[in-house]
Image (cartoon, rainbow, N blue to C red; front, side, top):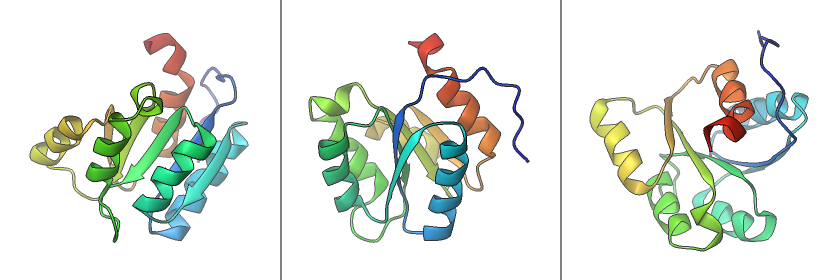
Length: 132
């Protein structure tokens, strides 16, 4: 259940890259209900292309995608001009401390272990202006 206690942030453009279509679409639906524009792609290559085309402010990346890992996508994005200002969020089944450290080293701002609590992500997005 979604908790509506958060201050609503201005609508943002978010990109979700996950090869699990159901998980990605469910998360997208919840974020759209919060007023955000959300685009979903199913692999790392499409994520890189979508960032260039859409210029989202937030990218939610699954780590274990079949073509390019989320770690590599994050590294490549951080090397681009548009990638410098993105908020990168890892959402993965891998939640050990070494996995979190690897995500930070790859350029992620946040690391969440699946299944992510939707309230956690909504709160994070709503507080982005306060944290910057």
